[in-house]
Image (cartoon, rainbow, N blue to C red; front, side, top):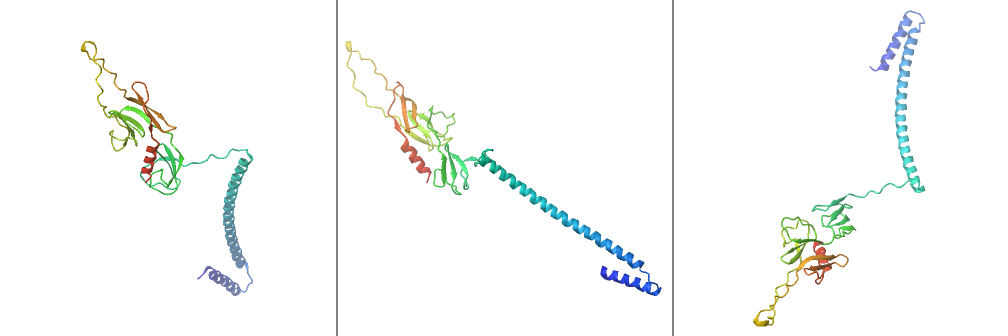
Amino acid sequence: MSARDGDLAELKSRQNLTTTNNAADYSGWEQWLRGRLNIELANLHRALGEVLATERMKFERRTGEFEVKIAKLSGAIDVLRGAASPPPAKFPTAKLWEDRVFHENDVVTFCGSTYQALRDTARVPTTSDWRCLAAGGSGFVIRGTYDTTVEYRYLDVAMVNGSSFAALKDNPGPCPGDDWHLLSSRGSRGSRGERGPVGIAGLRGERGVAAPTIQSWQVDRSRYLAIPIMSDGSTGPALELRALFEQYFAETAK
């Protein structure tokens, strides 16, 4: 039996009781009706309160969003008017390139230069998958005679037995080796010269001056030249290195 059926049954019971007593007494019915009205009124107040609370929350949320939009718009207007400086530009953090997959727009450093990926790629920079943002300005660094205890870096130049080698990467290993490139080799021993004239009383003449050797290198970065500095202070013939660099980058781009 539902609540409404119960109320009707109670109402009929009260009516029957009144009829039995042969008296027109409606006090019980009025009390019941007043009670039901109070209950329904309380339910209505509660429902209205819930509706008003929900709408208030929606209104406050929309008001907050509107205030944020107004704030953003005000900032943009201030920038356009020159009243405020524009926000600082955000640039991707540059990472050291390594043998793994990089994603589009990633920025890496490689051999002293900075590159940005044009697509997802695992290829080395200098290929068509990358855009060069800043080319490195590094050149040869003359490190003197090769020493096994020294840590060598990319483009360091070391001398071994009169020959010069350039490191093709950091920590290139023993020199000479696969990660070193020969810049200039030691010249072969020349033929023996003619014997000088015999001096007075058959004595041999004075010994000639030793031929000069390479002591260091002077690097001309603008023209990609390496100029040897000889032991007597003179300069030897320059080595043209542009073709060497072009060959190196062509081979690494494959």
